[in-house]
Image 1 (cartoon, rainbow over the protein chains, first blue to last red):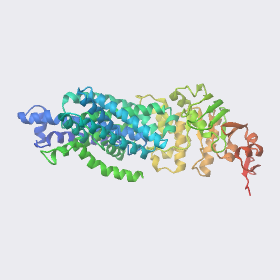
Image 2: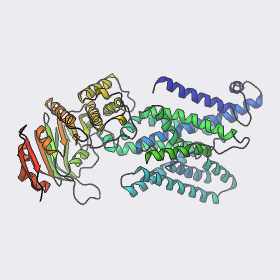
Image 3: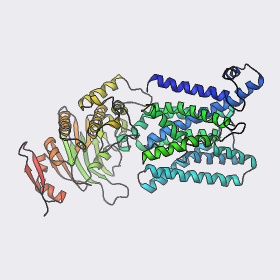
Length: 324
Length: 259
């Protein structure tokens, strides 16, 4: 992909960010929003922009970038254009881990992503075991079915835990299951960003292994890739990124599916570039989806996960038709 | 140089050994062909070389490397493999694909350099794929894809080249061109190991043939030693005669009708 397209992606992200600061139940002009960012303007505007909207935009950015990269890595490694953390049950597993932690009273921003990661990693292992038991070599369709089943199980587990939890926890957990960046605060965003940066860098470092694995296991092995170890590492990093987004914003589906496909449609081919483009496009998309979520029925808010699903489901059906 | 001694390989859950004490050698400077019926263990040799199936006993060596214990990345710098089938899940440019051959020469953070680009160009030129470099892998015909794969293997730069059914999808001209190229590469000092069903073709190009039967070496030697009715008939379990090709004088297997 040429430099002008990369510039385009960065500009689109910047525009989405500005829209995220200025649009909402209280419309603020772009000029006022940018001035408020610098702390200039009336107190209420500054508070809305800096305290409420900026944190949402940043959390949406981390969520979108993380889900986009996670989807890109999973798709390449599994050789499956339908793979993404939500459909594979990885996000569901992360939600179970996070809800477990909350029910147990662990809510420290440093610990929540770790709990979510434990759940996500367990889900990855479970999905791969089910798929392998059912089809010997992991058939892409069986893999998705295993993911849907694990996701449904995760939902059920969360319901069971909620049935015996206090009311505040229930509300919290419901938000998780529908996805939202409304509760964003910089205390937790700081940790999410730190975890996400490490996971994203590690994923970019193994990008060439993803390229090799996308050729097939034997071809990758012939290129000197230790297939099992590399696959495990990429799955865990993808699970970690998905878990970070779940810990911050709950279940936001289909971003990991749509975003890498958009990146490829722009002409990006090598895994390292697909990962970077997916981070940019994912961040833009989720910031945009959050703007939609908080403006179409303002002052009420739509769940973020519902907005991304409205985009993602038709896309999934299109993909499914092409794959079949 | 590839040297297998008493190699035993068993797939998990399988009743019989896929390789059952196979010993053979592929020396530098010549084309060695492994032939045999379906399920005789031909492709298992390839999968063993790339570390995809564990060796239960015996030893497989590639140059100074023991396949069972070697660092896979270092081994891949010496050993290039073109597997039987390979299909990228997502299309790449042919240039990027050929450059993937440089994968074993790089760590996680090192960038591809001009040396890699030169290696890719040179490899593509040798494999007759230079004109394809700016195409996409999903736009290629079967024959073009096979040439591009050979280019990727050459870009890897190893002294040992292993090919599983290299003639698949190639028409007569491209097949002959591919085999002539392999012959040239061998004469330059490389070790070429072919796995193939096409006995008559490999008998013309291979200096050494290894006939596998149920995971064991049933016969090995020059094409004239292996391409004999009394050697091949019990292995293939089919009536056949070996004649001599009137045009080129190579041994020619002719399977007979049973009735």
